[in-house]
Length: 294
Image 1 (tube, rainbow, N blue to C red):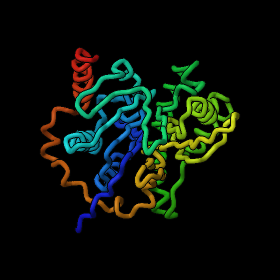
Image 2 (cartoon, rainbow, N blue to C red; image 1 turned 120 degrees about the horizontal axis):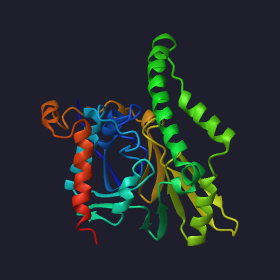
Image 3 (tube, one colour; image 1 turned 30 degrees about the vertical axis):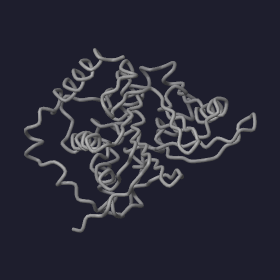
Image 4 (cartoon, rainbow, N blue to C red; image 1 turned 90 degrees about the vertical axis):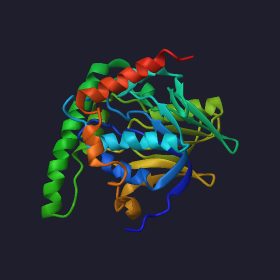
């Protein structure tokens, strides 16, 4: 197979990967990451799903994503890890910087005189504000629903050649019916306008979006959402002075990219990052690094 030249990006924003859950599309994400070369990579929350973390489930494909991120750091990419609600335990390390890697709760990038405000988005979620236990329960149900959806889609593709999405319909229906979710998109837009930001980027709701909006005081703000790597497999890319939504489903190059050469199966078997050890090792590293936090 002829390897394609990696696309150069000034900024790449990815959110809601949910490593450590059954719904995570780690293989597809890895294939995509191998086709791009970002100067700055923003991991906009819920990358490792600590809420749903299981001692018995952290497959090699998920580990490969972490390994690739460390390779990007070694090759010069600047990585910002913006904390989300499913990895909120990292918020205590806000401000930590290790070389090109930083942990932040929010981020402002100034590109060509245009300020872009980036944060995960759960701060505007009523469920997160008032009913964290309910949100966690919903997260577990959501993961089980994704697992069921995967099985049903396998049958559906064999019989009808099409796919269904239980999670999108049920998640949307429940949130609108119970009125647990604020219109945090509009709230983010209004606050961004008040702060003088031209762009605002969120994740959290697993819904890729890009739209220009005029705030109440007449300021123009572009709202963007990077989507997720559970259902939509999307991201936001900034190159040549322009933001665009990337969709894995429309990228035949990434879909056919071979990833087995990234890290051998033998190496993965020997790696001391399986099951609960993965979580404990990561936690220990952050705790050690926290001692040097400024």
